[in-house]
Length: 175
Image 1: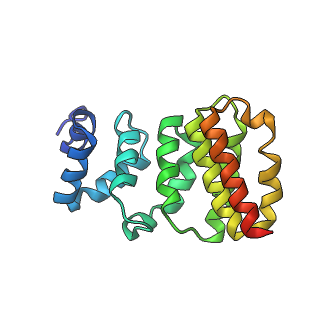
Image 2 (image 1 turned 45 degrees about the vertical axis):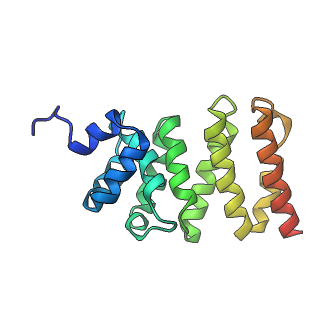
């Protein structure tokens, strides 16, 4: 294969519907590692689509993904919005240790604070911040200060409602 030739998986990612991609992954489990490596890479348009496919076909706390957790978190700030959103959705399905939680919380906070970023990306970052805060209640005050109107004015009403519900659930269970 020459440098510019697509792999079978790369072709699938850009020429198939999601259901076809998931069916392919179910019948070709040996390609799962390639999907992970492509999701981590910065090889567009394949990488963001591989990330999108990965969270759709992985198990909760998937052992095949767990060995790549550090790499997923490390590369998160370097990726573009659409791939970041998909990587966050992968990370939402994984159990993290405290070291990873701290780094991820910081990255998610930086994403959330960028009010010009895609609302869906920001909302997924916020979800992870809340999830981490459930284990570390001392972070709730920090999150609460990040729900001021400056951070939420650019969001749609439905995203604002999701943020309000997340905060309600978080404070209800911790106070």
